[in-house]
Amino acid sequence: MSDLSVAMPANMAELQALFRAAAGPIRLIAGGTDMLIAGRPLPVGGLLVDISRIADMAFVSADASGICVGGATTVAAIAADLEIRSRLPALAEAAAQCGSIQIRNRATIGGNIANAAPAADLLPVLVAAEARLACIGRDGATCELAICDYSPDRGYLIAEVFLPSGGFFSRSAFVKLGPRRDLSISRLNLALLGEFQDARFGDVRVVAGALGPRPRRLPLAEEALTGNRLERATLRGFLSALADEVDAAIPGRSSQAYKRRAIAGLGLDLVAQAVGLSPREQLFQDAVE
Ligand SMILES: Cc1cc2nc3c(=O)[nH]c(=O)nc-3n(C[C@H](O)[C@H](O)[C@H](O)COP(=O)(O)OP(=O)(O)OC[C@H]3O[C@@H](n4cnc5c(N)ncnc54)[C@H](O)[C@@H]3O)c2cc1C
Image (tube, rainbow, N blue to C red):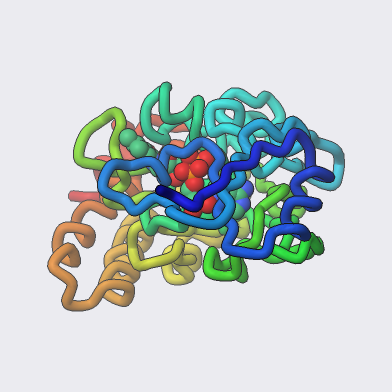
């Protein structure tokens, strides 16, 4: 017989009290889309805390300082949120491309971050936007972490994800490449946040997923765009920088040759989406010839 007990707190105060009182191991479950995959070991003892019913963990609120997303907010709610769609469209796009409708309706932002899969789709945008996490430790105490400093090993509950308005740029884009069009785990994904005015790029951040264990900023690719006009030479420099980034990230890996080629098409789609053009425009075709 299993020694696992299950708790379903209704609010944050109940959750913190549970944390303080628990003597043994605690596991969290939100949407269950990662945890309940067949073949993965399920918790057999200790306390399993279902956080999916905590109303004050599922919300999106926005003001001049930024956007705050509750840790148990579903990916579907993020894809549909009007503030996110207008101020950080790349995050809405990444959410819209996560799994299927059924997965998006259950999967949460906290689960996506905590599961920390190399191919997680929300992570590249969250890293580019320099998201900050409000966490609760197993002693019930709160703390704040930059997303880059978060590690699932520390066992923190992610209560809120804060997107500071300083990390919003006039343009943002997210693209992914998977084995098929729908319900596809990324083989490679890219997020771009940047300024673009009068056909010239200002500051640009580019982050790749599935190019190593964690999302990776691509400084060479950023440098290739920053301060430059949108023209063939710039795009060619960008594609060459992306290939160099793949070589630096996964030297000698069996996927290196494939990702080196694949990142070119994905990179052009990324820039086209960011500047609001079709990747079929002649400019983009010329860049690869
Ligand atoms: C068929 C299928 C397709 C998928 N497609 C995609 C895809 O396209 N893109 C993508 O990115 N992902 C995809 N996923 C993975 C998954 O849906 C996401 O990672 C999802 O966001 C996980 O959230 P969840 O709430 O379901 O996590 P759960 O399964 O509930 O939990 C996952 C892990 O996170 C921990 N956890 C959950 N919430 C928190 C929290 N608030 N604080 C701390 N720890 C927490 C749990 O303890 C557990 O270890 C797919 C999964 C499936 C089954």
